[in-house]
Image (cartoon, rainbow, N blue to C red):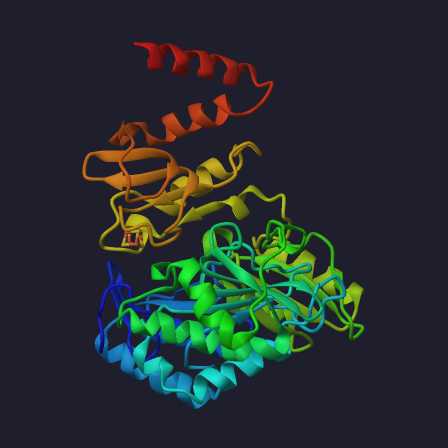
Length: 429
Ligand code: SF4
């Protein structure tokens, strides 16, 4: 077993966490039946601590395993024959090929890339977390999903190529046609590999790389008007989305990315076998339904099950790990605090991360507000990550301080004005 930090905790290499071993299954974008997901949940209850998660990238996590139970879980999952891919991740939109509003159908290109990468020996020469994103845009964009190499559709057959980041932060190299993309991605992965076993796309320097791979792969300069500007991803869809094959998609999300396996089984029991299911970025799942009426019925069921069914649900903007309630490294009850503040999270706070400790598992990147558990209480970090230092909050003051902050950021709130005045006064002390 590998416990290398930063490694992807795949079935063959579970990762040590504060609450035992964690296994992450590469489910993003794969089509699964409700029966398969129920079977996964059953295995999580038998082998782990019963808590399952959908990650920010749309992968499925099982927590609280021991070495023995992780080995047994591997046997359980092999017997399920889910057909999950085990190579360099090539992630694409969960509705690729079905989305009427997509700029391009990313599915055939993603499949061609997987074949090309699998036929090479790159997997052995790349860091475990190296990934490729192929984003065709539309209702399920991948703008916020970071990748080592990105292909973002600028037309039906034209792709903006960039390295090391999400759509906003990645370094743009140029534009290529669909036919040239597989060789270009192979060339870029070779360049990442040449920087060593731990190298990532962000380690490459865009300018020399552009001319190096551009000569072989017909990479054209990026014109400003073709540059792709991403739309914000919403984990839940409010209304069913009509698909190209006559079906309807419903996007739902797990509150804070996590649920008891038994609760998910109970929901899927009520759903029945009439849908297909795909896990999606944003800790979400897409249910593919035969009709809009069916999708609305499932939306009601999801709502009653406490799942996130609306893009306006504040829980979609809160990230929280189990904290003291499921992780030995936890210093605060992160999810309990998250549940308490969810109802008062104002629209003005784009994201709130409550982390049991400085590792920041639930949201490794920047959040508008981050509360990090420490030995003496918590730290409050603005526009930063759980690894940064911020304002100290005493052990018994976390809920009060957060309530005051939420009120201060709620426009037109008298209490908010009072709190803001108090904060300003405090800042001036
Ligand atoms: S961030 Fe949360 S889940 Fe991760 S180690 Fe710390 S307490 Fe555990």
